[in-house]
Length: 150
Image 1 (spheres, rainbow, N blue to C red):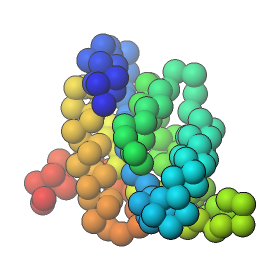
Image 2 (cartoon, rainbow, N blue to C red):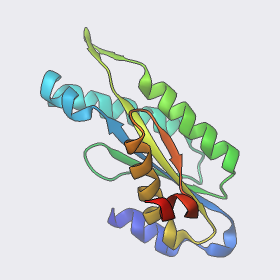
Image 3 (cartoon, rainbow, N blue to C red):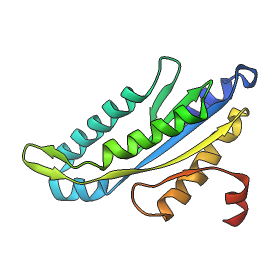
C-alpha cells in the first residue's frame, strides 16, 4: 500500500488523466482452505500474468495483500481502462485447472478516474466496495452520486 501511495503522491496532475483499477479476488480464501496455499500461490501467479497482459509500459501493477491488486493507469483512456477491467473479470471467471484440481474464483473490480491522483485510491476503494456488494465478478466505477448514496 505504501508503494501505491508514494506513486500517487509523485504523480503529476498536469500530465493527464489517471485511473486506478482495484481488483479483489472472489473465493480466494476457499481455494487456500480447500486446495492449500500452493494452489493459492498458483492462482496468484495466474492473476499476475493476466494483469501483465492488460498493461502498457507506463502503467503500474501493485499487489496490496493476499488477494488485492491495483493497476495504476497514466494518461488513462476511459474506454481502454473499462475494457481492461472487463477482460480481467472475464479471464478470471473461467475455472483454472491446477494439476487436476478445478479452482473456481473470480474478481470484483472498482475503478476511479481523476486528474487528481491523491483521490484515486480512496475512490477506487469505494467503487470496489460497491462492486463487492453487487455479487461476484462485478465492476463498479466511482462517481460522486454513488458516494452520496452510500
